[in-house]
Length: 204
Image (cartoon, rainbow, N blue to C red; front, side, top):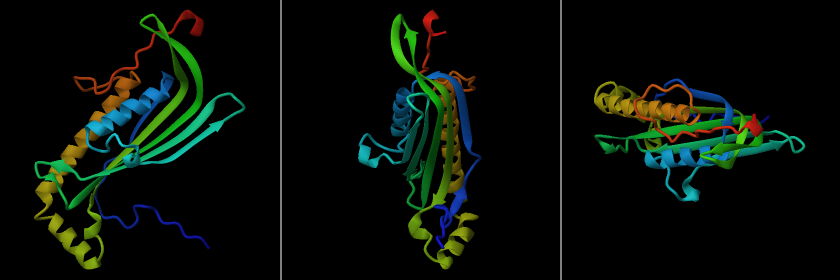
């Protein structure tokens, strides 16, 4: 009998807020969304520009006889959190992306008088961020219990700072996605460039 274990089963999670979900049913560019999210991740230190270090762990595309496409995409990012303690070796931060595109079809839009290729369909982006103890501190029950005790005393200021930093990033990411999909946002400044489209009469 094959036994499956969740990849987080043996990890000592310190903090994990609710999952972020953004859904759009409109015109968008899957390729451009890919690019701007990648740039956001680079800017916030989750990856660099080398493809070998960009962790796209899953990509599946289904074509239905030349009609609409369905896509599943997963990214798994890891980095050391960086608050005023700089890169803290005791902790690890993880950011998961799960994207699902349904009924994706090519279309054309008019932007500043130019026709551009785009996509239409439903796009769902789910993001989850978490703070964990570094892997090397999770090996034995003694270490786990020691860290659990210490986290309530010595490490609390560091944990609080990392939580605040990661929560702010998650909020920025949410606003960035909403800005891209032109959903109502709450931050003063847009976090990503809008994919602002003007449909021509032929495409209505």
